[in-house]
Length: 147
Image 1 (cartoon, rainbow, N blue to C red):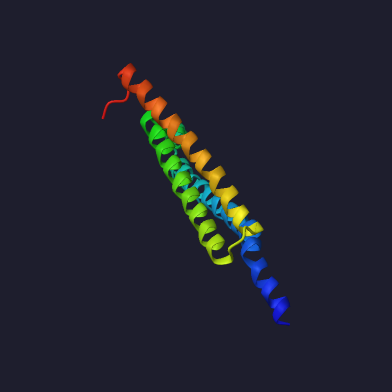
Image 2 (cartoon, rainbow, N blue to C red):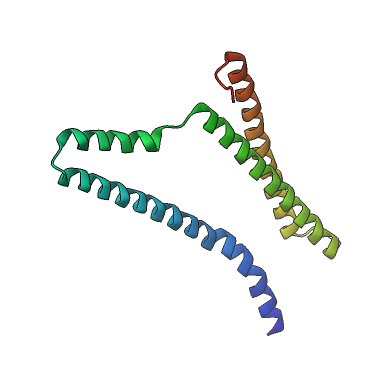
């Protein structure tokens, strides 16, 4: 029985990461979009109740522009944020892999998984940081990206 419970315990974390975590992310994003749409519908409903057609058109255009209006600076800073998050996450995963490797003294599938995922995450993070660097240099030379 102890042998069986050991493998069940080892299977819980990957199962959580592969199944539960993506489902929770999709659920949260969907819930956020539904709440945003409900709030926009309430705003439009109040504008319609005021019996002003011009106001309703302005409100609808304002809601569309508010969700789609991003400045170039926001996009560049978002690339910086994503690059830092992916890179730090990848370094963290590689450190966890080294901790497991030090405890077991041999490379297992878990360690290889941590190292592979960490390396991929670092590569994605570095790519975001390169895009940030190139785009910020481009905006500086154009004179568009001044603080």
